[in-house]
Structure formats: structure tokens, C-alpha cells
Image (cartoon, rainbow, N blue to C red; front, side, top):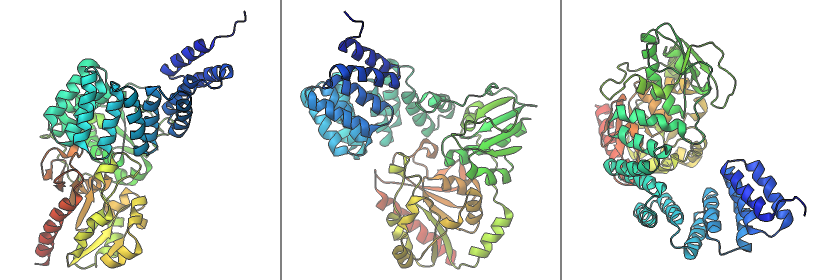
Length: 495
């Protein structure tokens, strides 16, 4: 007898390596297995799910399709192929694969959950609920079923119901970071800030969101007097702009505040006197910061440590300050433009999944341009700016400014000569609110926690007015509300 491992032993070892996340080892073991049996479906399946775990849905779909060709009766092959197809933006193929998996095994609860996810992506919320409930009837211990139901209930603004579903998930898996974060969103949206900030700390347990490793201790909320605090931004531009308001409080408590942000924010935050030092660094920069410090803290941890509630939000408004020289330059550019000057923005980063629901299109906003006496300017940045074609620009008299808006400091200066900004929920509304300019924010039904429930104002930004969709995806009705309000404002402005 030779000492070579058997096919079954190799596949068993490969599965254990997959569970440990050792995908290079999975590949090595599976190749040995395929050398023994080139047609082995389980070996191809293991390679496929390993590829999916390494964010290679294209390779995963190819390998899983080959596995299915050799063993079409295995429901889990179809279940995982559907996940890869969904990641590739192929919902029809994903649904077909899930239907096949359920035909082979009707009690496969995970397939019902994934079918519900497809329904949710399609905007069929009631259909998604049916799928999740069916999954839980099959397996009442399925944590993802409760979590997904909670997310759907948030879409309907039923936060009491959502909190119950997240509680069910956490009873079964107390360390489930997604359920804690779902709970945080509902608590914060209903104004339960102290509880919400505590739950929000679980964001650092989410995949691909590990906290920054620093040699000095993290600040724990004790008096920072006499200490150098390294405060760094996290997540998106809007989050950085919104939470930057808390940095001056640390200065008032006696700390030297060393604020790090993405390069696009440096000029603005430095000019706003929020910190003793502002430095720019990209989020994925692995090098140490260019200064010494005693404690460090992520910016979005400050509200929890400072005991922030809706009643004690930073009283300093505006707290973002544009460069006076650039304000004068923009005055020369826009100051003589007659009529009400209205800025438009309709989308955030199109690569961000959340943008799918909260963004509209420029065409959705075009009914506003029928109002007389208003000069419209596009402040939209990035790929969505191409929606302002030459034809639309000429027909609707919209002047593009995006090429001139080189960073947030430049946009802040331009906003000083825009009478009103109308935008979906993107970073620019936080910029406008932070510099104290009038801004109307257009919200989808399941908008983020920071906009609270039902309100038409924002305690975060006194100069902001909120407009909410009457129903999921109903931009037409929302824009009509805005058009009527804008007509009233324009009429007042003319008199």
C-alpha cells in the first residue's frame, strides 16, 4: 500500500480548509482529488464555492455549472450557482437555479431565503415576505430569515416589528453583527439614540470592516485633557461630513485633535477649524499617520462616547466653513445670474448598493425645470453627471458645474451662491447642511436612520427640508411635491 490520501480524504480535507477560509489549501487539495477523478462533481463544487468566497462569482458560476453537468440532482449545487448568478447581475438565471434547487428539495430553507432576496431586489416586498416566512416554517432556527424579515419591515417603516425580528435572530445567534446593525438602524431612526449608538458599535464585527489597528489604546470616553487624540473618518464622504461636527467638542474638553480624512475633504475640514491638525489619507493606506498620538478613535464612535441624543446635538451651525477667497471667486461666477439659483444632484456613487434605492435620475427631476424664473445648475459629480446630455442641457436650461467642483471645499464655496440645493440622499446634502445653505433632501421610503421617521425637518441640519416618497420607488409623486414647494418659493422670491 502507498501512503497517498484517498479521494474521499482529500475532499474532506478540502471542505475543512474551506470552512477555515484557507482557499489556497482548498485549491491544492481539490487539484489532487481531480488528478484521481477528473470528473468528480464534488471537487468542482468545492472549487466553485471557494471561488465565490474569494469574490470571483464568474469563476464560481463556471465551476458550479460544470459540477451540475456531472451531477444535476444535487440541490446545493444549484443553490450556490444561483448566488453566483445573482452576484453577476443575472437575476433571471438565479431564479431558475433556485427553482431547480427547490424542485429537488422543497424543504431547502436557504433557497426560499435567497428567492426572497431576489423578490426584494425586484421591489416585490410582499413576495419577499412570503419567501422568508416559508423559510422559517421549514426551519424556525434560521437566523437569516428573521434578519431579512426585519430588513423588509424597515422598508415599510415598521420599526417595532423590525426590532422584534432582529431580537429573534439575536436569541438564536447573539453574536450576529448584521442583526445588531439592523437593530441599531431601527433604534436610531426612532430617536432612541443612546441604545442605537451602542448597537452601532457592532459595525466593526461586519465582514471587511475590521477596526483600524493602532499601537496606542482606543479612547474610551475618559477625560482627554492634555492628550493627543487621533480621530479618523470611516465609511462615506457624507458620514465624514456629518460626524465631523463632534471634533470641536474634543478640543473643548482639552484634547489636541488630530483629524484624518480622505484627501477630497482636507481643504474644507482644515479651513473649518474643527481640529488642531487635519491630514489626508485614503481609506486603504496601510502606512502609519504622520504624527504621534496618545489615543485613537474612529469618528463615528464619538456620539456614543459623548452621550449624544437628539436634544444635545452640536449647537454650532454652520460648522463647515468655505474658503472666503473661493467664495468671492464663485460670486464673480454666479452672483450676477438673475432669478432663483437652484442646484440639482440626483445620485451618489453608482457602485454602492445603497445607491440603488436612494438615487433617482436626472429625468425624474426635469419637471422642476418647467417653472419660470429659476436658473438651474447641475452639481452632480461622477458617472451620473453624463445624464445631463447636450440636448437636455439646452432644452431645460441646466448649467453644469461639475467640472469646476474639484473637491468639497470648492463645492462649499459654490453653494454660497446657490439659493437652494435639491438633491437625493448623497454627500452633498451633508455639505450643504454643514455650511448652512438651504437644501431640500429627497428621500426614498426606507431612508437611512439619520433622517428619522416622518419628519420634514432634520435636527442635524437646521437649513434642511426633507421630502419623502409616498411609496417605494415613487419618485414622480415626490418630485411633484417638490415642484409645488419650489413654485411657492419662486413666487415668494419674485415678490
